[in-house]
Length: 333
Image 1: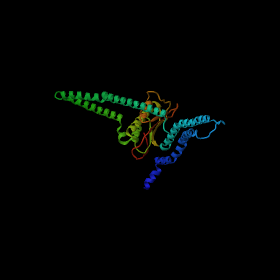
Image 2: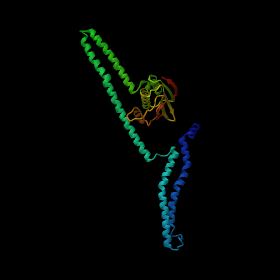
Image 3: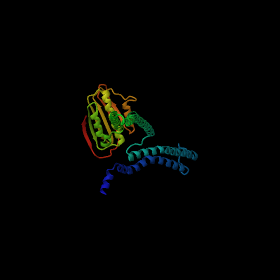
Image 4: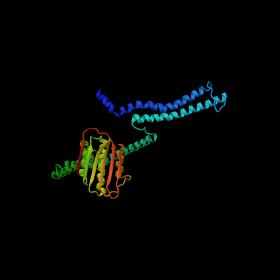
């Protein structure tokens, strides 16, 4: 019971509901009570006109007094009914702020959000189709062609075994070398789809491996108390890989820093280099591709690259971590 009470007292939603029990009666009285008072007051004022002795503008005329009573009472009723929808909307916004911890999104915000989700879904579908075409092309032009060649070579070896064993041994050696190349191409293809180190050891070690193989010396700092979901890890991994490749191609940098941080439910990856700067977000460029890939997860990418450097690119994504282990370390490649 003590543990339950402690949890209830510390839980933010329970605190908001307790506040609602106190704030709601006040809100009802202030927001809904005034329009309802106007409506009922106007009705009572009109209903009591025939039995109440009223005088307007000093006139002692029953028809005139009755007419003005109906006009004033009707105006009160109209005012109350007109204010009622506004009071209900304000009460709903008040309830959302107290119970939900924030204002309710407007129709325009919801429309913009739907449009954004539609765009990111289309980008994700296009990226998936492009990835499938790339895999098909690599298989057709690489490993598949080599395997077909190996099959033809083995058929030739079969015919030469009885007549020219020396030539058959040479062809057999070529077939062995071709099979090794085909195996390496398949491994490279699998690594391009989902790197084994990323699947086995997670994002920190995968980023460190990228740093070790990078052309420009790269220092990695990771503060990640857990592991994000696999799809998000893959998106961040290939984003970092693309950024390190861009540094090697265009930045003319001597040093690169990669910081992977997790704060307040958001994963932030910052890639900084001491190159010449001047990078831009161009349509069809690598940074736009990273932006589309991150947009699938509601992620963003920002660029700060003045002429003369340094260049800082920040990727930020909302995510939840799966395991409570802590990984805070640095590596230099």
